Every structure is written in C-alpha cells, then in structure tokens.
Amino acid sequence: MLIEYAVASFFASAAFGMIYQAPRNTIINCGLVGMIGWVIYISLVWEEVDSVPATLIASFVIAMVSQMLARIYKTPMIIFSVPGIIPLVPGSLAYDAMRNFVQNDYSVAISIAAKAFMISGAIAFGLVFSEVLNQIIKKMRKTKAQLR
Amino acid sequence: MERTEDLIELCLLIGKIMQQNGAETYRVEDTMTRIAQSFGRDEAQSYVTPTGIVFTISPGAPAKLVRVSARETNLEKVNLANNVSRNITSGDMSTHVAYKELRKIETSPTDYSMRMQIIAATLASGFFSLMFQGSWYDFLPACIAGGLGFIALINFIRLFEIKFVAEFIASLLIGFTAFSLFSLGIGKEVDKVVVGSIMPLVPGLLITNAVRDLMAGHLISGLAKGAEAFLTAFAIGAGIAVMFALF
Image 1 (cartoon, chains in turn green, brown):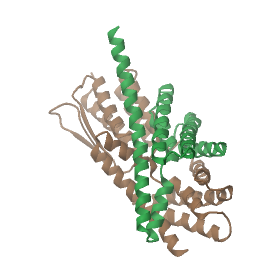
Image 2 (cartoon, rainbow over the protein chains, first blue to last red):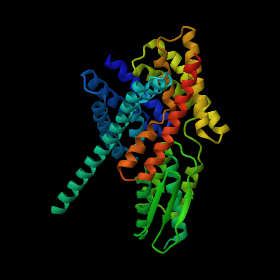
Image 3 (cartoon, rainbow over the protein chains, first blue to last red):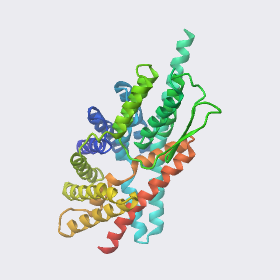
Image 4 (cartoon, rainbow over the protein chains, first blue to last red):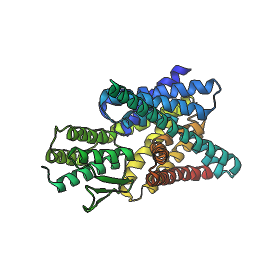
C-alpha cells in the first residue's frame, strides 16, 4: 500500500508546512519533499533495511531535493527541508519509550529511547552530508572556472 | 556613505528576525556578516545563540547585544528576511529602506489564519496516525484529539508565560480525548491515535537543528536547542503518562 502512505505523507508534510508558515507558493513542494522522503524510508524498511540507515538515506535525499528547490525558488533551504523531515522524526518511538518508562519497563524504555536518539542523529547526519557534498560541488565548479 | 549606527541596527534586526523564526544559527551569523561586508566592513563579527545575539562592526567598536526571548517557527518571515538581505548585498536596497521593510516583516501578522492552522494540525494528526501504520478507523479520533490539542496549545501559550506548561496541558487534553474516544469504541488502536495527534506538538525541528548545530561547531546553540527540545518532549510525555496512569 505504498500509494496510501505516499498520499498520507504528502498531506501530513504540506499541513506541517502550513503550521510552520511556509510561503503559500511552496506548500505543494513541501508536501512533495515529505512524500519523497517517506516513500524512500518506508520502501527501504520493507526491504528489511534497519530504520537508522533508512532514515539516513531518506534525509540525505530530502536535503538534496530541498537544496535544488531552494535554488529554483531562491529561498532558504529550510523552507523545504523542515516540513519534509517531519515524517522521519521519531515521534512514535519517543512516545513508546515514554510509555514504557511510565509502566516501569525501564530496560525496554531505554533501548527504544536509544533508537530514537540514533534516528535523530541519522536525520542530522543526512542533512550535513548533503550540505558537505553541495559545498564540494561548488568548490569544484569554482576551481574549474579558475583553471579556464 | 551609510551611517555606522544604522548599519549596526540593521544587522541586529535582521539577525533577530531570523533567529526568532527558526533559521539555522550559521545562516544568521552568515547573513549578518555578509551585509556588513557589502558595506566594506570586512571585520564585522557576530555571535548568535538561541537566546541572544552579539554583534560588533569592527575591532575596537563597542559590541551590541540583542536579546531573543521567544522562538517560534515561521518560515515565511525567514524567507522575507533572506530576500531583504539578498537585495542589500546586491546593492538594490538602501539601509534605510531595508530597515523599514524589516520592521514591517517583524510586526506583520502571520500569513495563515488561526483557523487554517488548526485545520492543518487536525489533518496532519490524522494522516500521521495512518503513516504510523494506524488503520482508517484511527483517522477520525486522531484528527479530533490532535485538533483539540493544537487549539489548547495556542491558547495556553498566550495565557502562560512558560511554554512547557501549555505543552503539558495540551498533551493532557490529547491523552484524555484519545482514551475517552477509545473507551466509547471509536478508534482501533489507541497508541496510533495518540502518536498521530501529538505530532503537531513534537519538537522535531528543534531536535534536528540541535544535532545539526552541534555538528557544525555551534556548541552552545546546539546544547540550548537540545535542552529546549528535551523539555518539550518531557512535557508532552508527562501529559500522556498522567492519562496512562488514570485510564
């Protein structure tokens, strides 16, 4: 049911774009970025990839697409990446961890909380990787232009 | 030649607007120094943290400080401030015009009406419960709980000075709504309903920005944002936990 997930993530990300007051003409793109990220994540998880590397790959792609859109629309990149990242944020894991803490299942709770921490680290790593890649590309273009 | 005081005021104002509305720390610092550089002030330095901005235009000149007391996420304002900075550095806008423009941006009302934001939060909650493998039976209760929680959040933030209290009460309300609807037979899995409807409150942006700032070397910003995110997550978790204990 990939289509169902795609539709749900599109509307969820677009709605988050509205909550975060993204400019009106970018809302549809916010939804698209979120959809791309979630479809990549969920298909990787279905192929039995662990959720941490799956998150890393999805957030890397989200950041690349956001940078592309940012260049087209001449806006800061976060307008697209923030609503797009939201579906990946481990909200449900954080909730599960909290619930287990309350029910005195500390060992389960700690391991879920560690997973949530790893996933938020993976999101940030994906974003940073794409930024670094972008800078390298920019630098290479500059040195090429200088050589000519 | 521009007056130095005007330039300092301009840089501080643009930095404050961007930092208040959720721009990344490095972008705020970058924008401020770049504007100063476009007026030939190559030695300008800015130091940005989530709670305050320090800016000095040249060595020996007194440093100026701006306090940032409230932070929210308003991407439209970040975008507008970014456009102004683009126009200044390309020389299309004088500091005087830019300052007026920024004042307008700072006080301008939000682009989306309250009602539209509430509708967005309502739908987002429903769709998130679907994305976390909830069934369509969970869609409606998640919408109701998430919408009510968001209404509570924006109203209580106005009422209380402390944001975390508002978040705690909002998540109490979400838990209460979800569990009562569930005991009335609406919704299939109460977990999925709760997870979907707390999403509009979850500090996702803060967590990611915190780790990002830490990696980029903005250690103070990263730790401060991390602390804010942790407190928010704790407030939400505590609210839901109370409901767990009751039901």
